[in-house]
Every structure is written in structure tokens, then in C-alpha cells.
Image (cartoon, rainbow, N blue to C red):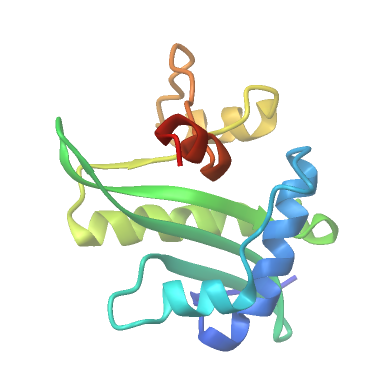
Length: 158
């Protein structure tokens, strides 16, 4: 089956949001997504976009996406963070995810960044094995820390 990888456009954001929600369900966080299509459009397509998104499509139907954004490492300098990579369940196994991944790596390489980084759930062994097969180092000795808006508010006493 032939597919195409391309830069996302504003009009793709409803499909991107749908894929984000599908990923949240896969990651057992189905109620965690609060971002809207409008949020994605404003953040990704303003004068200073906050992210870069690539789309995979088959016959003009969006079946996958990868979304990344710039970061800065005090050790390495400019880096790229791969936030999400998802292929809709019915299209998995067609190597679309690998091509979306490659597109992000190529994007970072062409920007001259020193590293592309991302998080992977420790139970997602197929993804871990794939990443390792590409030369990625999956750091198993780091834990991700996050503080959500409600906790920020409480911590700051607001």
C-alpha cells in the first residue's frame, strides 16, 4: 500500500487531534487530552510556530502523524523533542511509523541539532526494540517528572 509523508497544514489539525486522542487511548490516558483543534492551529501555524508536524496519508486520508518541537540542552545545545508519533490502528504494520520517525530524525539532522529525544512507555517493547534498532539509546534509568496545572496552582498557593 502506497503512502505519502508530508508537512502538516492547518486544515489537517482535526485529523491530527483525532490521532492524538487515539494515542491517548493506546497509552491508557483517554481522558487526558484537553488540547483543541484551535489550540493546534494557533500553536503550529502562527508567525512563530511552537511545533512541526508531519502527516502520513493514504489516498488523501490522514493515517498517521509525528509532532516535534525545539528544545535546548545545557549539555548539547539545540535538540528536537519528538512529542508524539501515531499511526491509526488499522494502518499499523505498513512501515508508516518508521517513515514518520525517519522524517523527524531527518528534520532534526537538517536543522543541525545534536540530539532528537522522546519518551517511550516502558511496556511498549515493540517501540523500544524499533528505536534501539535505529541506533537510539533508550535510557531506562531516568523517570519522567511532570506537574500539571492544578498541581502548579496548589504549589504556588494561587
